[in-house]
Length: 362
Image 1 (cartoon, one colour):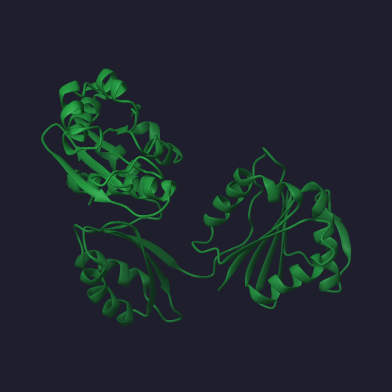
Image 2 (cartoon, helix red, strand yellow):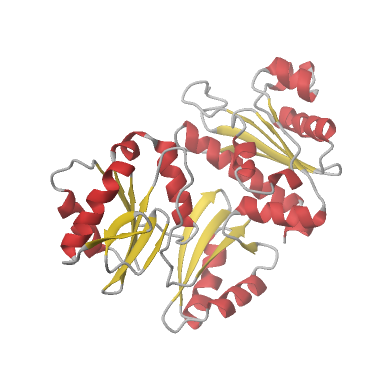
């Protein structure tokens, strides 16, 4: 089953944050969004674009503005030789299957078409599309791809499961497991967990899982971030319940701030530099001390595009995680643009947390 979002209206063309909020809402129903397209409501070929999308996809969300909502309803009414009728204060095709405030759905030829009217800075209306595919998200830690795929693939064949894998950062993989027609997803997941008891979790979102497990264990996490600029804190606090496990963190770009806020010694900074094992070790210690947290992740590196040297090229990042008893710090070489290097570094910090806090997290 293929899923798509059509954005019709001027606001969607220029407001990335607005669009992202709709995509997040769609992702709550569907793991995969196979396509998204943007059109102005005055596009003379709009009916052709809508028709093509309906032909090519099974589950279609059409996001409209106040101005484009009636246009889309007229297009759908024309396509299905239907009439527009007044329901819930809206003019909609008469054959709608379900309708709520600013949202309605049509079912036709095993396809679902959900039209929503969205206003900027307002809550996204309820999405009425229903996923007909049973799936699960797995995360694999501290194994190379070949190590786990040679065990997971036969298991997937046995229980008739399709698996799709992607690499989030070094030695951290995300796996989408999709039930086939006669598959047994529950048994696949159960047996996969038996294969990788200390390397696999079942979770849609790593940070959501982290919040759930640390809340139960009454544990707290903090961050000391340099080149990632607060990305870890941002990722965590996007999830409801973050305050259960997170009191705060520090973004320490300048050496003076690393010294003043985290207690990193000037001698360490002078001798080894900000991007070093020694500095990150002291950042971990300082973050734990200042926050009173149980665990700390610290990151310092060169995200680029400038600032690299022969000894420490762009993408060199020291990532560490520790508690009061131990710490793990790795020197990494990430590839990509600035934002992608930051993302990989942040996710690698999370990977190290799962290693340090394995008793609470596996």
